[in-house]
Figure (cartoon, rainbow, N blue to C red):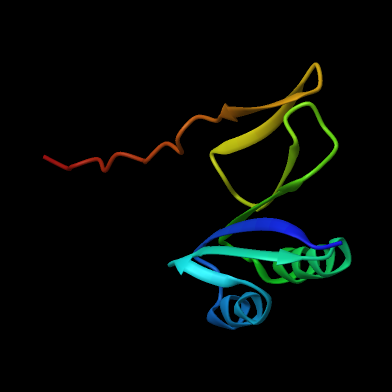
Length: 105
């Protein structure tokens, strides 16, 4: 039975965006929404994780949890889903430190 999925992507290859567009609609750049079966959802997510590279992706889909949905992530992200007594909360990681340039006097 099809169910709604949302896939958000950042800095992924164009061919991945094309592949996602075959099954979903890109409602704004990088945000894909569709209604697909669990099998298609899992195959799409497998394709995303294989080619995400230096980019990032998040999948949100219905699940039998207290919140009614599950979150999967791939790539490097500052926001990390974290299970807290059965609830998925989002944990923020520290921003990457930028090395300051030393000027020679």
